[in-house]
Length: 198
Image 1 (cartoon, one colour):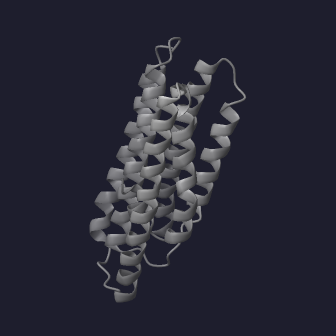
Image 2 (tube, helix red, strand yellow):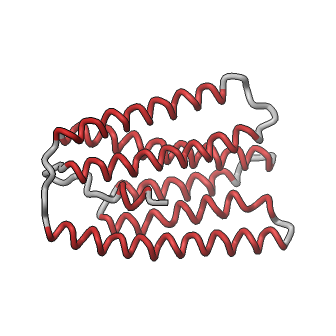
């Protein structure tokens, strides 16, 4: 998952290069797709799902991906930009991303295995969502993207708030929709923010 690596460009940088634009939009695209995963999986398991739910979600992801596509096509008009300092920083950031992503993946695998063996499989979506949310916090520091603090914080707060909902089946639905909303909002912000930098 390279969403954070690609989205981890300084969105508030004074100069928008072709590589930076493609990096931000590449990350935004992957975040949008992961948001779709959370959304469609949760909707598919919702017995009382209204007929319009999946079509509406499909429209949202289509619009987000179209927005990403438009921005990606606009990157062709930007200067290439060759900055050795930025290149060195990108290499260092990639290393830290690999470490953070490895820890995230390891924790998810461990927690899923423990919960599954303990007969607590219903808690797996909550655990995974919390781990995913928390992993944005160090990424915000590594990539110097304050937006990721909000992405991580809102994910964690949203998941915890879902625990207050009853019955349990609605809690799982809530988690999926919260994660989708946060990731989709992050995507929209990145796309719109790029527009303000043009």
